[in-house]
Amino acid sequence: MNSTLESAIHRFPFGKRWFAGGLLLVLAITLAFMHSRSKAASPTTNVPTATARRGEFLVIVSCRGELTADSTARINAPVNVPNLQIVWLAPQGSAVRKGDPVVRFDASGAERQLKEQLASLAQAQATLDQAIADGKMTTEQDKLDLATQKQAAEKARLESLKQDIVSDIQAQENRIDLGLAQEKVRVQQATMELNAASNRSKVGSLQSQRDKAKQLVDITRERLASMEVHAPAAGVVSYLMNFSQGWMNAKPFKVGDNLWPGSAIAEIPDLGSLRLKGKVEEIDRGKMQLGEDVRVILDPFPEKPFQGKLVAISPLTEQTFEWPPSRSFRAFGSLGAADDRLRPAMNGRMDVIVDRLKNVISVPAKAVFAHDGRPVVLVPAREGLRSVRVEVLARNPDEVAISGVEAGTQVALVDTLSMEKKKNSESKGFEVKAR
Image 1 (cartoon, helix red, strand yellow):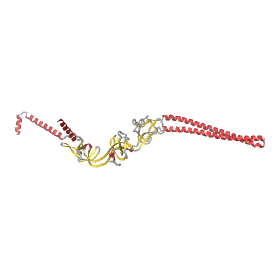
Image 2: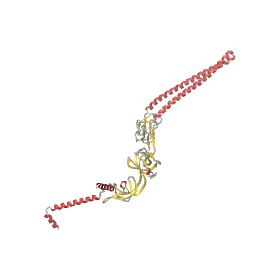
Image 3: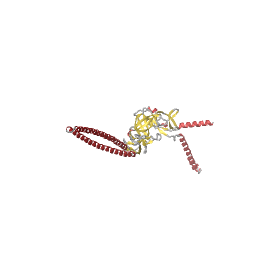
């Protein structure tokens, strides 16, 4: 037969080329057929899939919230200080130590008032000193007049003793002079006491005025000393909202704002007492227990979850100021280890671990579908995707614990079967309408 084929090839000069071309054509047709079959047999190559894994499954209740400090030192404006205006503030969020300046107020008015009060105090003191000196002079003059009157009375008494050697008329005159001298002594003593009482009253009044002026000076000096507010504790500065222009225009305090005496200006939270305060729906409140483990993931640091405990749950719901208004419980979770980067009012998510399932299969939540009212997963097969019924053991927002498939099974994340079924039903309906 070989000889016959060789003779045929030699008999036709183009036999070799024709034979090679035929082989190439048959090979190309075979490859195209195999490619089309493989493409038809694997329609799920473009469907995203995930791998079912085996391990511990954490059943969680997730809630959103923000960081709050359990211990906070508040900075208030000074009391009994009028016309407070901010002229300097420490930067928002800056770290301060205990005793560092945080807020300064305009002290020009108080300084001008202090100068006026010091002048009034000096004048009051000078008036008091003058009154004391005048009182001393009056007292000394009264003492001198009293001594003079006593001397005259003593002289009159001595003259009255001469009644035995003088005439009766002269003796009577001497007795009259003695009575007048003694009366003048009594009048002078009364005058002296009156002048002393008057001096004491005048000096007391002037001392009261001086003390009042001194008290005003002391108050103004205290006000000047309180024009710079210092940090009562170490931490970071967080300024409060200024609602003087209304709730809609409220902004944190800034330089130039006017304050009421005693107004709360800022807070210095203790970073070691930071907790996440989350909103918990009523349906999830009964699933939680104090002391359960929590996992806190903050929006600024999603790469670092904080492990803590559920430390408190509000006994009653709290109403929010959002619209529409709603009511929810508040749950507080600790953060475990402290981090200097954390600040109050940072938003984040808290996952409260309410149960732990050991050695179970878990898949993404979007890999579980409902077919005929039962949960299924779609796994790749030779003819496409096939549904496998599963039992849902627990469900989280992003993950589901199931039974019915093995670990390592690839599950589809898109329900192409339902999509194809819907597409076919729509096409059939279109054909019926066309007929």
